[in-house]
Length: 400
Image (cartoon, rainbow, N blue to C red; front, side, top):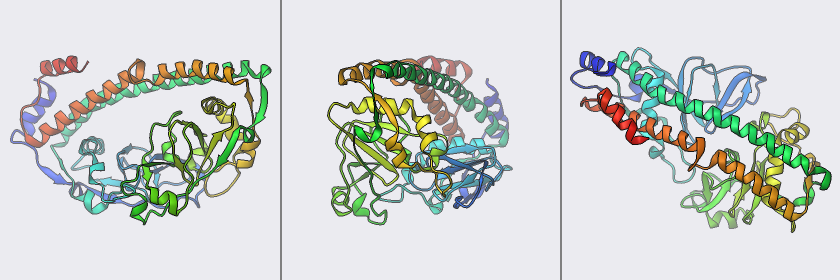
């Protein structure tokens, strides 16, 4: 019999009570941070950390629930933080529930299913307060957290190793590109093709968003070197009414205005037709220029570009786009560009392809975590028998 079996048998043999979130925590709104100075405290939005400021809104463990936008994500934070109005924070009654236990419970609930909007996804306090979760005794919660955190710890270790691989990739990509510098002409980024920005259709007009199928890139999408889709999509009507430019396949997008520019300059290759918002600039390449090559070069030199072109002051971090356009990169002959792309994409595949290497193992660990999370928390709701240690081992073998 496992420790969790013993605790359940002793402390809640008749099952576990459901409680609404409003019974165990208070949901609090976020607010603006733009008048604050730089500091050590992270500012959270619906897409994660935006910047760092010199004050915090809350300094106890909390689960952050996005209110608008990326509502399929949750954040567990156990250090002081600030949050903006696109994400709620929670004040949890620790006499009733452990914050980390609440985090695992809410992950299981898939709160994105409670979306109350037809356009940009959103959640309301009224809806969230009625969500019901099992609340066993604290000792049982603590043991469930211990079991589930073991899975997340393993995933974190693998993710750290993958991060190290990516740094290795960045090192060798720069080394490869620098090797071609002496045999390449240096060109200004402005010479690579046509750059253009975008717009944001009115969020109040559902006709611009509801059932939209045209990708619309914003800063929250710019998290990988190659985009495969966007979180938000607009309609044909928005494209005509606003109006907005539909960019062709094989373009390059960069972020020019966002809190993320405090520490990162996102660049992405876009293989599909798309639109962008006003914080993004996109390049349609000229003849004889490979869009994928340009994206790889700008990713390789991203930190130097960010450092040289970042505007000083201002309420939101941004780049001086004229300085970005004036930055020079090596541009070898087209066939050489394609050879470089082939080499670097092969290395990138090793790092990123979900069918091989570390990413596949990380995904397997995540599925394993989700399996046991749902198993343990379903047990907590029903009071039915939990798996024994031997059964757990067999399930683990099956997942592997």
